[in-house]
Amino acid sequence: MSFFGGKRPARPTGDAPETPPPPPVPPRQPVGFETVLGANSTLLGELRSQANVRLDGTFEGTLEIEGNVLVGETAKINADIHAKNVSVAGAVRGNISGNKVQLLRTARVWGNISATAITTEEGAFIDGKLTMVRHDASLQTVRMSALPEPPRQAVTHEAELEVVVGEPVEAEPPSTSSPDEAP
Image 1 (cartoon, helix red, strand yellow):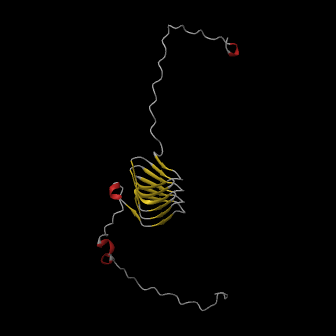
Image 2 (image 1 turned 180 degrees about the vertical axis):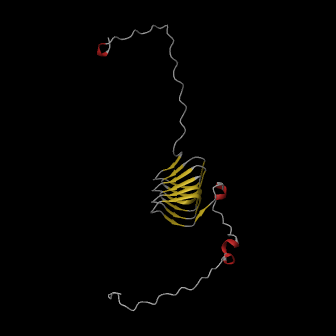
């Protein structure tokens, strides 16, 4: 007898085939950040990675990341950052280059930024030059190299300007009445 007064179905004898065990579950791909520098950590040197990197501690050197970089609020970075996408909430002293660069409200950057898209929240601090690059430029060309001078014709437009002079407009003489008097 089973719960609630119902009858339990008869169990099959040992002659019935067993159900096969479920297939093994493949390991999950890493989600988020593969490399994390904790808030109480310090790293000096060069960090290269093909995956996403999160920095919450102190780093000094060079970052060459093929994935995304997140600079956390507690991070103090003294390095050039080259990555696919960069999001900054902490302090960075160095140049940043990538496809998309996002500066959160707590971000403080002392250096040049070069990217296809740049977003800045109110409150972020930047002391440097912002350079927008074309979308088809690869990460290799986004590096903070010297920019070429603009073409001379783009700088001087005097020869292309057309000046149109119309009839002179005479101004009305100033009123001699005081503001208290009615007209």
